[in-house]
Length: 128
Image 1 (cartoon, rainbow, N blue to C red):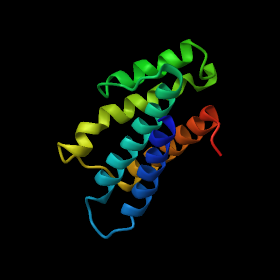
Image 2: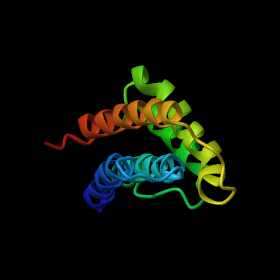
Image 3: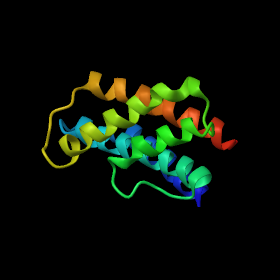
Image 4: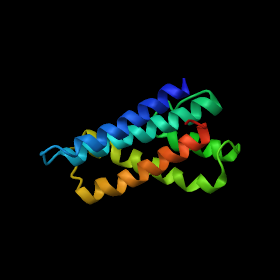
């Protein structure tokens, strides 16, 4: 089951990279929404593998990630990644429902963070 979540996380990430190639001024908001889903799905893969659960509410995602750190399923060196999850959650409503504005710089910054989170997830899950 966690592999399905992780594969979906990668698809969300790749789709976000493709969407910004469009000639549309709303592409960065849509791209960020896709990156947010990528992070949430990667976190779901981690929590499913080690805790046999996923966040029932997006707000629970950070708490479950912190539980993974606490139980030493994920190295403490990755504890700051909880902030990536929180940033994703904080921007979710703005990107999806409130038609918030996101710039190319916002997208590029969040893309780097998402790629970092996916890379860590892959290492922890030991997927090739």
